[in-house]
Image (cartoon, rainbow, N blue to C red; front, side, top):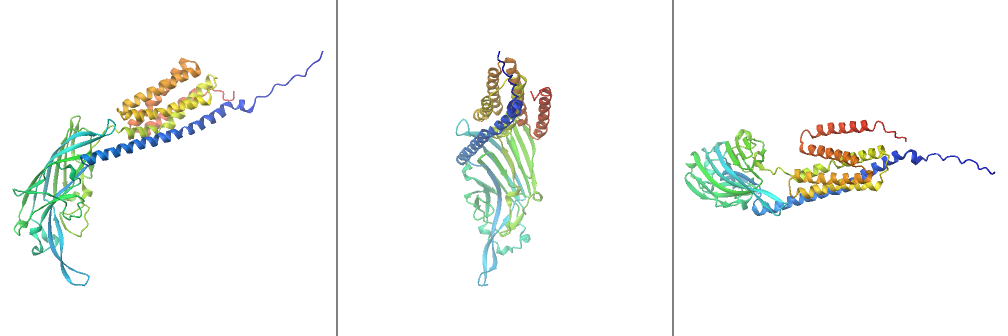
Length: 442
């Protein structure tokens, strides 16, 4: 009988011996590849955020932009002898500026919303202000201006106002019991970009007297209002029913904030600012550097929070794939690369859902809906891949904890780095613990 030589068993191929290692490299490549769609989603978030700002600017231009109030400022022209190009002495008109001894502003901000659609909204206000104060006798000696050089009949009051469109009624000033109407333009007061003025002819006796003034202003604005502390002593009191104020400037107020609104009281003195009580034209003065005020912020900046969320995309994708890979190894069931790609796309779709839904509801609501939809989709897909409800439930629980962890990080401000570091350490420790008995060479 013929005998056949025994065929030797073929050795296991290199691919079979290193299947897990090769699969790990493939998964790493997929994680990096999925950063491409997350990059485009991040660009989409920025585009929507810029569109939101553009629409707000359009709404503000129709209502009124943020308001910055400076004044009143007493301006007195004077003649100064100077040499011209031919070395001849000529008289040139210059301006001198004098600030109030005391300035008091009391007001309320009535807030409202203006919307282009259900998506883009801008918070606006109407400020009802009462302004009063006093002027002490003018100290001309500090400016070295002879009183005979003053053009007192050309004196005027200037008032800085950043947006004329917000004026709701004729602005007037009551100066020593007499009303004066303001006119448009700051009348060549260079340090006021925009403003109003009214003639205030004086006499020689007037510069040695104390003067009182008061004004009432009804003014529209958007989001922010601030004031320049032009008084040697300035006191500003504002109240509003808006519960989310953000106080700006170098001078902070004594404040009271509750769910029903806020009240703020600023006190500033000439020693707290960067400009003097009186000065002449030619002396550079940055008068608005000492401004203070309040910004009526919208607490739910969904675009900023969505942008922060997508920064954790690499973490979510990586941890999801790592856990999926461990399940695959432990259950000795091969998962195709296409299935990993589909799971990765589902993780990316979460961010587009979050962005689109957050434009119609709160960030918390949109995050909850998007996370639940993503977890449910991937859990059902996991059940079909592994054929096990238990595996799908365990994986779904892991995803739930992961999205909850990311949500907590988004809500934190100063403690986000600490919480994130501790959380990642615990996640890594858990992965190391559950993978300790895996025989990677088999």
